[in-house]
Length: 427
Image (cartoon, rainbow, N blue to C red; front, top):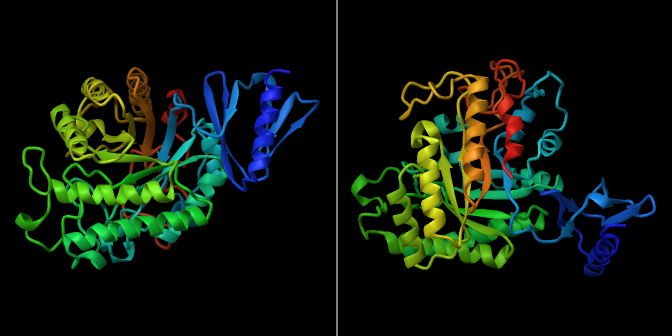
């Protein structure tokens, strides 16, 4: 029986290690499936099948089983940070044919997704009402609970530290309210302690992250200071200047130190959003190298209506891949509208990809073709795919104040959109 002796050896090794919870990676025909086992594995039917985390596999179809993700493995999925809120408020999720989806994580797995991303705010209760209306609610207890579900369902878990009480992005990297009076040296200690304590709680809850973003869209630095500070006093970083880079990179080093100590197997992601600007991207990651920041993966946001065409993206990815060949690259946020594209987008690509369900699918197909052509790219995460207002009673229960129409469900019908089913082609 193909691989029976090897599989037996792996199972014996697992038993000897007495692992209560372990990710196992099953390779078959070029695809890699992640299973999160808590009760071991066993052979059935005279060795022709092996049961792993409740799923049976034909042993003849398995190429390998390992406890570590293969170097060639690609990670595909989405940022599902609001999934819990949609479920609690009664959103009605259906497949494209109208069949009701009863378990969202199982459905994602059936579609070939193997990784999910969740953001974490320091104290989202202090966010403005408008930010709360945009989905800011992910405190540590929320993230621990969702992280548990993600890991137990057999997904890789990408944790996105925002290091702010609300949205952290290129225009907003404001210091959490509770940290706002700290000096730079005190912030170096605080970011280490906070990162370490958050990760320790996740590990204790069997929600260990596999990827960790130490900051969200930190193209211009992070922990600038209070949102009420004058613009000239904010600790922003620009690649055209040396100002604040020592401060910024020391924060990253302290956060990364905590990650290495608590989650030594996790890959650290440094996330920017200048996907349309090759010179800025290269200069930013040059700074990471010159300041000796410890990380594993270049993370990018790519929204075509902000960052330009796929040709631009491909050229910039190839440049990064060549210049920083020791780093993997992930698109940790992407999306495209299927309805009602705003009028203030930087690039209107609707003549190429119409603002329809089919146009969104066409964009997704083209994006995947682009990413598959660059060797170092190993991650693709759709942002807010779970957006779905169908079934919600807005007078009593709502998740956000406005519809987001670049998710992967139709807000008006609750049905999955064709683009969702295409993500499995990233491999």
